[in-house]
View 1 (tube, rainbow, N blue to C red):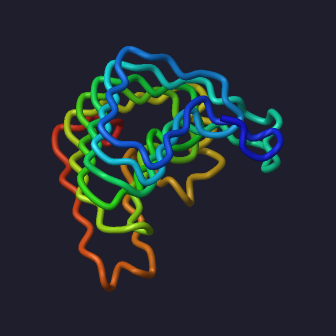
View 2 (cartoon, rainbow, N blue to C red):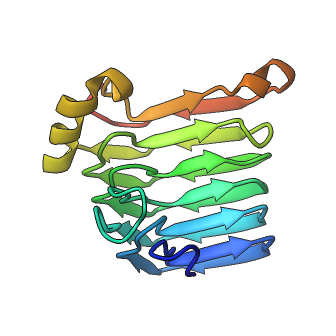
Length: 178
């Protein structure tokens, strides 16, 4: 998908439903490697998301981003590999259930898995995921330590959180902190 000039996603799903993506590879985009917007009943499994192009043609410069899920809900993201991206391993902003189970995230940069409630009430299950640092992870943490603090999973509350009830269940994830 080619958005604005120089900003291309490998795949974008808009208002999609009942989709299964299995055994696919997503590489070398200048924006997100994969994106959903207002899509429901989505399963992404046994796939690879790697090497979003950093400092390529994106207008923001450095923009090596992994998968992003916005709006919609009832998403199952399991048994995937996300590697060599600086951010969005993955980024989850859904209004409903998001199951993230048995994934491997390797060599992330500034932020790893980020959950936000800016589009609704996410109900996230982050279970048995493995976060492994690499050379880019160490360099990014040294530079951006005030933001990432070394954690693999971040949950950011928006200003609308006063009226919402986001939930996150975290169990069995392995990272440097555990």
